[in-house]
Picture (spheres, rainbow, N blue to C red):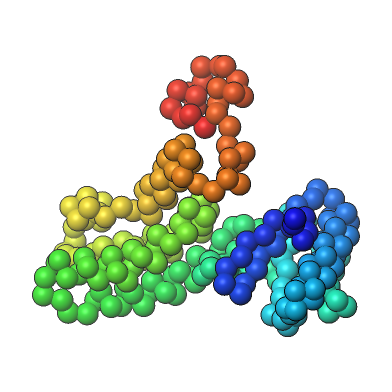
Amino acid sequence: MKASNFNTVLYADDINLHISEKNHEILEKTVNHELKKIDHWVRANKLCINYSKSNFMLMNNHKNINFSVSINHHPISKQSSLKYHGVIRDDKLNWKPQIEKLVTQLSKSCGMLFKHYTYISDLKSVYFALFHSYLTYSILNWGRTNKTTLLPLIRLQNKAARTLEYNKTKTTVLYSKHKILEIPDLFKLSVAKFMYSFYNGGLPNHFDNNFAEIASVHKNQTRLASVQKY
């Protein structure tokens, strides 16, 4: 039996609770009511919640909404962005805080690439270890943001690609020559892998109702229907 109506994600000693509602007043009452259930379950099982490290984020398109949350009379602070599993999610889902964090991390990685390496193979190894690995982590989420937000990352990747050959070769040629995917293509590959796993039953059950076949929505022979199944 579930302790509350929250959708719950657990990892080690961290817990992520999320719930949705169109009306923010109903949502506020629901959240505080469900948190009472959580607090009761925690106490019944002789556990405790670190109130000082607990935060909440309200995702909406409105400004200045009066929304308060508390657990056992301890106010929970509202944040515009929260870090979970190494990814920063913001309340507008524009992913700007995550992109800014990546720019800082990858700038350091780019500096490593400018150190002297004798062989291109060594540079490529450093690129994939210190640049590509950061770039692809959770790209399925933040990779859908607009091109303007992605531009600093795109420029950094171009800079990193140029270190493989110290000449004025176009970056598009460098990517093709060294078999490196650009950020938009990395995102498309991530989406393709995700949908392949979904189609072949390789994802957790809670994804089952997230997608519908186009044929089940309409029978029109549209351009989208001719190239996509979902």
